[in-house]
Image (tube, rainbow, N blue to C red; front, top):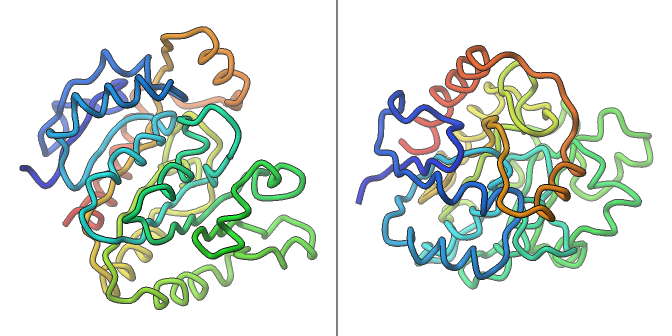
Length: 279
């Protein structure tokens, strides 16, 4: 089995430019994008489960719920760490959706806990946090670390809140809590600022230098046994009208650079991050 594999769902990446094997799954992209019925998810998993590698590259963040499938491969208990501009902890239907995959991960017996770093959007704050998995957060199974720099002072007291000036200190304390553990790392490129990644969603506040530092800290303290990167922009196509409607209502309307510049920006990010994740 190769150590790394690209699963091509949406042409977000040019397979000819990648330094590892690519698996063509384009026919599945419209069915899986943003959300999918459980029967479709399971059918996809049955078809591809035996082909997966420990480290996976796949398409837009619209497919981030597939991380919960990739996690099924873990044979030993592990801590899951997600770098993402969104908490992806929504408890509302549909069950399989890019905005709720963390809950599917927490259902797995070998997932000890999940930590999400770099959330910048409104889902972590009142009132939208009511739709998040607060129970898992209260019990410590889930840690959410949203940016609070531009929030009111009282919001900075939120559990897990981080600031630009102190997030590295908080991250080191977090990592020290499970020193020596096996770790799965998932990176959604929308956690990066707009000039360092072009995605289908809002941009985050991390820089590539930030993630390089965080991955180095993880490697020093833990064993990264598997992981994935998603989040590169791709033009959306859908298989079902309800899926399209929900997705289009949820996505922001943003201006983006042209295709060539988009490719250059995202490949630049990948070339810097991938060796630290999958070395």
